[in-house]
Image 1 (cartoon, rainbow, N blue to C red):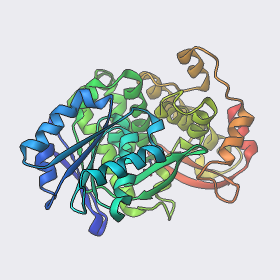
Image 2: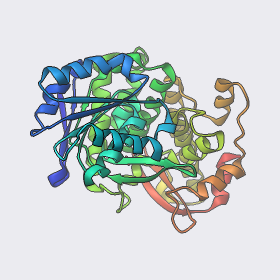
Image 3: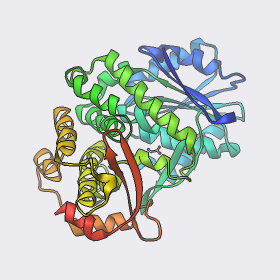
Image 4: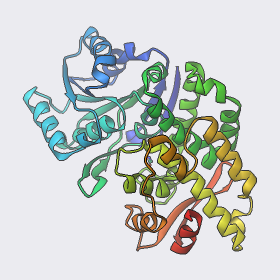
Length: 376
Ligand code: GLY
C-alpha cells in the first residue's frame, strides 16, 4: 500500500492507494473509531459495479450501514438531492458519530462532502473515488460543493475527508472517455508541477493506454503527492498557491461552458486548455516577458505529442472530429466566459501559465487581446 499524508494539523488524513482495497473498506472505516453508522452514497452507475462489494466489507466488519443511491450525472449536485440526503440521514438515525462515505466520481464526492459538512453542523466523511479524475484530483483536498443553475460549485465548503481509499483496479471498468478525461488532469500535474513525472508519462504511454494497474497506482500516487503538498500549503486557496492546480482550467472551463456542461468530459477541456495556456505563455514571451522564455514551439509540441499519444484532444478542432458537429466555440464568446469565471478577480483575466517544464506561475491581469490572439 502507498500511503500519502495530507498534512493539515488537526484535519490531517492519509490517501491510501492499494489494488483490491475495496474489500478493506470496513476495516478502514472502523479504524476511524467511534463509528455509530456508515452512510454509503453512490450513484446508479457505481452501485451495480461496486455497491455489494463495499457494503459487504462494511457489514462484515460489524458496522451499521445505510445505503443511498442517487442518479448518475452532474444534475445530482443540486440542492434537491442534497436535501434528500439530509432527510435520509436524519430518517435513518445518523448522528454526530456517523460517517458519510462517497463511493464514486467527482459528483458523488462533492455532493456527499457538502452534505456531510452541513448535516448536524458537520459529520465525518470518507472518500472512495472510482474515477481517475476523482482519484487524482477531486477526492483529495476537501473541496465540496453543489451547483446553482447559474454556475458550477457555487455553494459549498472546504471540508476535509477523514481519509481517502483508492483502488486502482476500479479504473478497469471506466468508459474510455472518462478514463481519458482523468488523464487530462494527470498530464496537467506533470506539465505544470513535475518535470520528472512528465518524462515518466512520456515513457509509459503504452502501459497507460493498456491501463496497467501497477503503473496506474504509481501515477495516481504521484498526482496525490503533488496535490497533497499544495493543499497543505494553501488549503483554502488564499495565497494563490492552490490555484496552480488549475493549469489549463480557465480556458477549459470556458470551453466546457460554451458547449454546455457535460457535453465534453472535464479533462478534455483541461487538455485543450493546457495547450492554449502554453501558447499564451509563448505569446507573452514573444512580447518581452522573460519569465516565459522557455515556452517555445518545442515545449508546446512536447505537450501536444503526449496529449495525442494518450488519445486526448489537443485542439478545439479535435472536439468537432470526436463529437460530430462542429462545436460553437467562438473566441469572443470564450473570452467573455473567462471574464465571468469564478476565479476572475476585479474583472481581470487570470491564468496559470507554464514557465518551464514542470513549473508554472499564477499570473493576474492578462489583457483580453492576448487571450483572443491565442484563440484565433
Ligand atoms: N481541483 C483543484 C483543487 O482542488 O484545488
